[in-house]
Image (cartoon, rainbow, N blue to C red; front, side, top):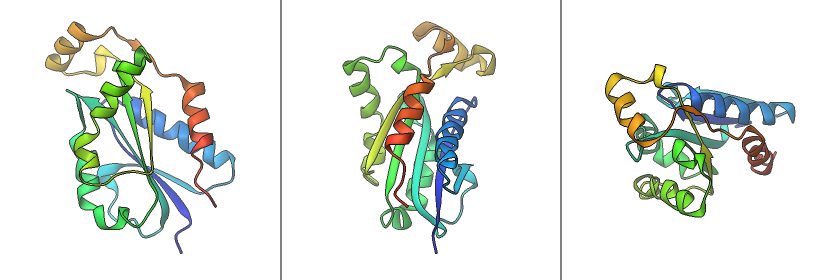
Amino acid sequence: MADQVLIAYASRCGATGEVAQAIGQVWCNQGMVVDVRLAKEVSDLSRYRAVFLGSAIRMGRWLPEAVDFVKKHQAALSRLPVTYFVVCATLKKDTEENRRKVAAYLDPVYEILKPANVGLFAGKVDFGKLSFLDRQIAKMKIPEGDFRNWDAIRAWATQMTPAA
C-alpha cells in the first residue's frame, strides 16, 4: 500500500534540492514518511500516495530531467495527487508580474499533466557553481545571492501537507 510521499526534484547547483529537503523536513516533523530524491533517480511510483515535483528554471524552462520525469511517469502521475514547485531567481522580486512570468514557464509541462497545486519560490544564484557560459548570462540578468524565503517555503509546505 502506498504510504509515502515523494518529493522529486531537478537541480543544477543544489538550491532546488535544499528547498525539497526543507519541504520534506516539515512533513517528517508531522510524522509523515517522505522520500526526497532527484527526479532522474526515481523509477517506480507505486509506493507513493502523492508526488511533489520541483525544478530549477534555466533559460525560462524547467530542467529537462523534470520534464522527462513527467513524461515517463505520466500514467502513474495521472492517478496521484501531483504538485509542482519551481525555484527561480526571477522571484527575488516577488511581484504579481514575476509570478505570472515564472508560472508561464510551466506551460509545456501543463500540456503533459496538470498538477493539483503549484508552488513558486525565489531561488539562489551562486556564480561559483555555474558553468562559464551560464555565469556570463546570469551576470547580465540577476545579481548573485540567496533569495529564498525559508519561512514562506515552510508555510507553503504546511499548507500543502498531503492528507494521511
